Length: 320
Length: 320
Image (cartoon, rainbow over all chains, first blue to last red):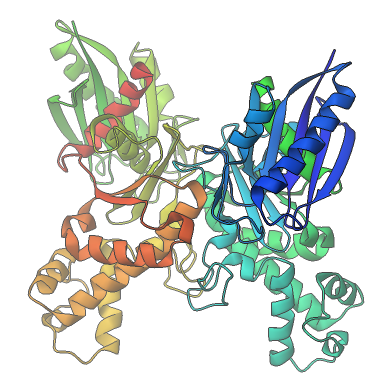
C-alpha cells in the first residue's frame, strides 16, 4: 500500500487540506471556509468531517501515516493555536487533542504556517540538501522558520522563529503586534504599500502610483510600476530590500545558515526584490559571513505549498 | 582512575590551561604568554610542551579524556583559529591538527571562547537544567553562544552566534570589524566608555567622569561613579542596557530561549547593568515572549570560567 500523509493548512479565510505522497504529489485536495466558523468546536467538527471523507476515499489502497497541520500562531509542543490575531477563534485552541479524539493515526502534529513552509522546503523543495537554512514567508505579514542542523528551531516554548517581529527601528512604524518598527511593517505586502506612501511624501518624481488611494494600491501595482521604470516603485523595492537585507544579516549572525529562502507574494516580484535584498544583505554582513549565504526562491509550488508544508510535518517524522 | 579533561583558553595576552574533573574542580592550572609568540608554530610547540608536562604530572592516577580549546575566532568544524583580530597569528591556524600530532587523545576539540563559555555554563554552571539558552560574554567585545535543544548552534560553517555584531544602527559607531553600529560598540567595556563620552557631550550635569581622559577612563570607574549617584554614569548604564535589551529581544525572536546568561567584566556591575537590560528587553519583546525569559548572571567562577568552558567541550562529548 502506498504511504501518504494528510496536510491541513488553516488560513484566516480558508482551510485547505490534501493527501500528499512521499515525493510531494498532491493526490487529493479539498477546501472549506475558516472565517464562517467563529466557534472553534463547530469549525473543528466540520474540519474533522471533511478529513474523514478524504481519508475514507483513499484508505483502501493507501496507508495514512498521519495528519500535519499548519496554522497561524500554531504551537508545536502544545498542539494548539494560541491567540492568533488573524483567526476568529479566541484564546488557546487545542487542535491536536481534538483531532486525536477523532482519528487513530500515530502522528498528528501542528506548527505555525511559516515553520510548516520551512519543513516543506526541507522535505520537498530547495532545502533538501541543506541542514542549516532560514525560510522567510513574505505575505500579509513576514513569517519565518529557522532550521539548525536539520531540525526546526522551536525554542523552549515552541514560539521560536518570529523574524517578522525583530525591530528595525524602535521609533519606527506601528505594528499590529502593538510595538513599533517590526520588520514586517516594512517587509510584507502592506509594508511595501506603506513605503510607497512614505516615498510619495518624500520624492517629487512623477509616478503612476500618485493616482491610487491607499486602499486601492496593491503590491502587484507597485510591481507593475517598477517594471515600467517608475522611480518611486523602484525606490520602494530598494528600501524594502534594505530593511530585509539588514535584518537577514542579523539573522545570519545568530545561526549562520547556508541558505535563506524567500517565499510568498512579495517574493514573486523576483529580481525586483531579490537584487536589493542580496545587495544590502551582503553590505550589512560581518566579514566571516560575506559571499557565503545563498539567497534563493522557494521551490515549493505556490498553489500547493501550504498543504505540502503541513504534510511534510508528518513525512519529517517518518523519514527520520 | 579518575577521569579528567584538559581545558585550554587562548587569550590575546595569556593562555591558561587546566585539568578539570567531571564536577568542575580545577585540579591543576598553568599559564603562559600568548602575545610574545607571534609565530604560531613556536607558540604551538611551547603550548604543547606545557600541556605535556601537565599531562605527565597527573597521568598515573587520572584518565585524560581529551583536550578542549577555546580561542577567539575558533572554528569548531575545522579546529582552526581563523583571522582572529586579537591574536598575533595571521590567517588560518590549524590548532587541532597540531595538537593531534602530539597527543593521542580521542577527543581534541576547539571552539570560540564565547561558545566554550556557553558549554561551560551548560555542564558546570547555571544552565545545567536548560536546553535552550543564550550566553552573552561582555568583555572588550561582546561574544555569544546560542544553545538550541541542548546543542550549541554552530551553523553551516562553524561561525554561528556573533550577537556582538548584530547591527543596532547602520549609521552608528565605527566597529573594529569595519562596519558601523554593531552591538559590541555599545555593549562592552570600551562601548560604555564611548557612551560616557557621548553623554558628556550631551548632558550638562556635573560628573566626576569629566575629570578623566578617554585613555584613563575605565568601566570600573564608571561603575564606581554610578554607585555614588553620578547621573552621567547612571545614564550610561541605562543606555547600555537599552542597546543590549533591544538586541536580546531580537535574539529571543530567533531561538526563543528559556534563559539568557550575562558573563564577563561588564556583568560584574550587577544590578547596574541587569536592571536596565531586563527593563528594556521586556519593553522590546513581542507579547508571546514577555515575562518568560530569565536574565541570569553566569554561575561560572570568573577566575576559572575560561578553563572550565574549554574543558567542558570534552565533557560534553563524554556525557552525551
